[in-house]
Figure 1 (cartoon, helix red, strand yellow):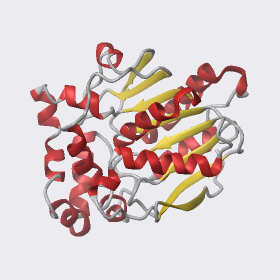
Figure 2 (spheres, rainbow, N blue to C red):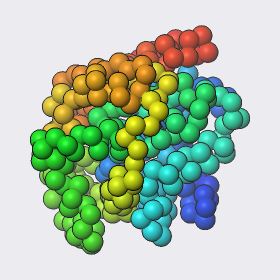
Figure 3 (cartoon, one colour):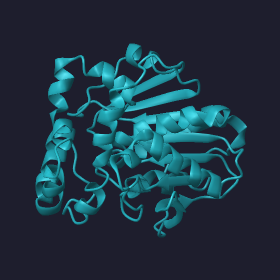
Figure 4 (spheres, rainbow, N blue to C red):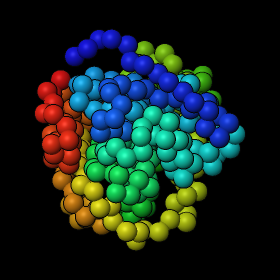
Length: 292
């Protein structure tokens, strides 16, 4: 696996600097990675380095994370706003006709699924890792067991309290992430935790508002879906086939030992799953990749 530094780029999107990691050759099929909370795009480093020789990789920093400037209101962190950021990046760095496979983890699954719906026929596949869109999560909240696991999302709705914890007690956030989700944060010494988490936690607030008006019966996703799940995730129990069949037409579920951050903790396995899935979705448009 290459150890060369990954390249970060940025453009202004609706008056806010918006950054992403880019790797691989332009013009090739696109793998678009959406990170979760409280991560940055660097959580995908293993997958980027393992797949960049065969794909054009784009991994944005969500609004407010690292060099993607914070928004001036909660709505700028919602899925409808974030998808405009992602479409602007795609418009900047692609020709507009390359096939795209979207990959998301945690809250990034909301953004990946939203982007797949907006790309139409250009979207060729979707990989989700321990996450789901708002419609699926709304159905889950009818289960008291899921409500008990998701109590921290209520904490995120409080004004200022999450920001205070992130800024002045980041070790608390690191401990909570480990206790709930079955894994460490990317930076085990929590340096930079506040930069990753303070502004992006507004996603929870934006999603809570959006869930009040969602349509749980929207059309199912047409491209193939691969759902990879950690059996020991303390935040979200593994999905059922029925649950995903309500959201997509063609779904394969892979449940493996591990916690919430499978793509980092089981990097080689997850990269292999993604590589094989892309080969199946894209066929001869990509040479066979070597699993890194």
